[in-house]
Length: 317
Image 1: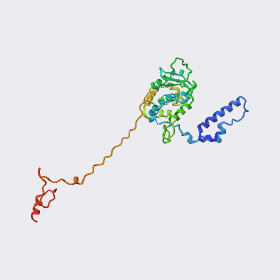
Image 2: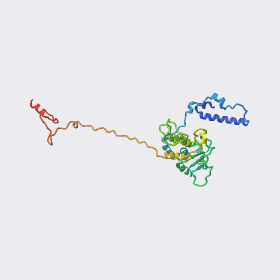
Image 3: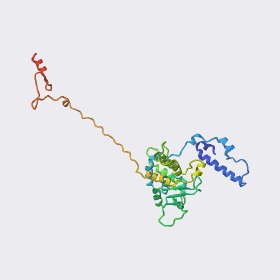
Image 4: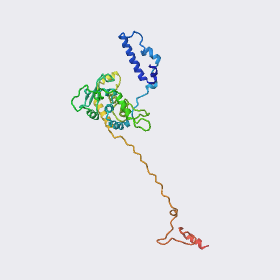
């Protein structure tokens, strides 16, 4: 089962093997299966059969939209009225992970202070993470508040039609709908290689924008992405989360996303050919002496200018 996926879809195969191994270990601990070698064990078993991780799998990244196109994408996203569109807006504004936005609860939001506290149980790093919400993100979330006062801490911020939590596929399906209507067959929103963008790629667009266009320190940007910076010893001394500086970073990001999309105007210069000169206009004008008629002498054309030397030469003939 794993061998066909090991090279084509390595990450899925790796997660499937680890979960199968955990299930078999649990079954043996409950005496539901006779003790022995776990057939899904990696070390000393499948590592000899499947081999190491393919090199090409390690260099493949999620398709991400270039950061220069993010304002245009946000303008198109705001035209969508689906709840998945608002959820994707929070992912972009906060640079959070998709599963964190799907499971967001109103009890985690402090809109007055602009803080979204993700509990350790839902955070990938296993530690509580405070997300700095920009004024634009807070305004978007306030627009989702119900008109009545019946709002509990366990209520989802982005409920589906049944009032339950959305799945990650809601935003993926939204991106598929936003790709519709292209005439050339290529995705409308694509990365530099022409691949259709993904939800997780929005975090990469934020990272590229912050690294290439701002002077915010690296540890502030990585903290906004909920990444661990430094080794264990360095993290033991750096106990702050740089929330104030991250709040300024996210405000700058929201201001950039709110800019009007750049318009490309093609200026075509009209090519004007010089007017054709008539044959008559190309001839030299006759020499005039004052207001009188042109000088006409024997042996000279009307446009020639006679000189004393020429006059003497004609008299000798």
